Image (cartoon, rainbow, N blue to C red):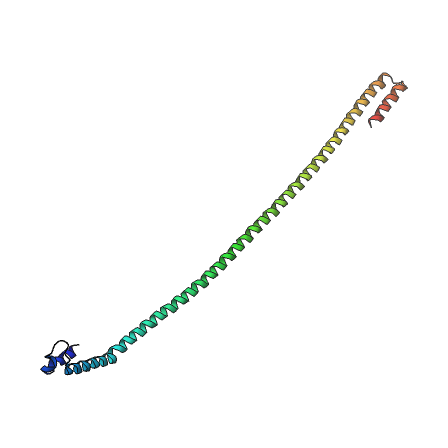
Length: 180
């Protein structure tokens, strides 16, 4: 801007010292104004406007790159969110399956334990019955032996007292036969 002001100072006095009022038109001043305007416009077009345009294009490219990057990030975030949701759904399904398998395994184990307990109880009851039967048989055998021993002792006593008595002998004999 210092260049155009210097031109005005160098111009002849009638160009810048107009004798009219504020609204009067001075042709020299108008021509110099247009020359300076066009010169300034040319310099700006030659030096400033390309630099401004490059800066705007660079800025536009940076903004576009940021927008594209944001879109890619948004798409990646959606993809990751969908993937995470799929994994979460799969984990839920797997946990339900694991819980179901655990319940089924627990139920099978419970049934096996109950079956084994029933089997053990039946075996124990059967053993107790066999033991009772064997003890009953042993006890009956013992009672029979004692009864036989008593009968023999009684018979021996009777025989000693009445050795010739046939009736006593038949009695002891019948008694022994009943015991067996």
